[in-house]
Length: 350
Image 1 (cartoon, rainbow, N blue to C red):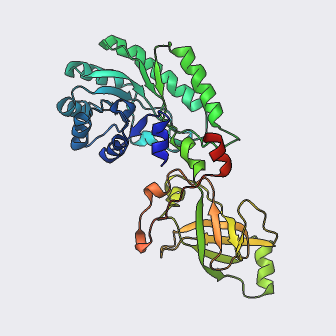
Image 2: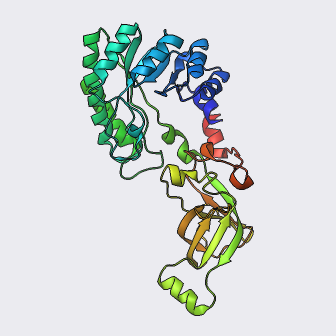
Image 3: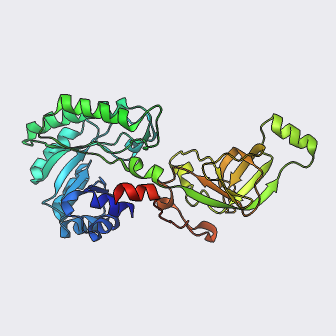
């Protein structure tokens, strides 16, 4: 649904695999709106891109250039460079990106192979918490643009990658701050002929999804009044709640994306409580997933009213790096996706 909406709005697509490319093509998107942005690709996937006229793709090493020469010699190549991702939660530079002292060799290799290199890409890392990292990366890209002229290339393409904050973030690093720094740096270093693309996946989808979970079990940790008072004084969890999604499901974002997920009351004692303050004394509790693994802890300490089995909790901003990486460990199914549209949104768009 999200992909179809973005496609209808004219968005391009950054794809990492054959299956992702196929999903986009199946929606009727023109291949020119796709960049195969995985610097290290499987041979058969490169062949698939060639067969389906997906020309733009990234590289960061000489071996990949020889592969592309063999399987997709007409590709439009984008050199993925290494940037300073020390100010990000997920440092993609550990795996991808050509250091600047290797870009000359790579451009020379591409020239010798007769390959078309059109520009530069970078990624400051997922969950970047310093907007200046984007500007510094653009400066590095400018150096490679200048270097490319020595090898007969006139670059006109810049992919500033991902790492953008979500739309709901209003403090610290915001999308607006990143856009301002990127815009001013690009304007200062490049002319109007440059084509700039970005991969703001989290910005598009994180706040678009809310996860609803049911309390499937409760475990009481206090046995008497004295223990209850002590738990309150020390802010220790007095209850453990087990819900029907966890770290092996939608909450894998806690492990892989360093997210902090805080539960809120959705349905309690049969009463709908979404976006409402529950007028009941709260206490500290921990929230756990359904699997048999003790790592399956969603929140070690949350301030919640007393919940019963069958009540519901919800978690906001769960659209990025959640269900896409979920498994069915222990036989638990992935959460179902339901799409809703408010009457106000309908009146705005139709």
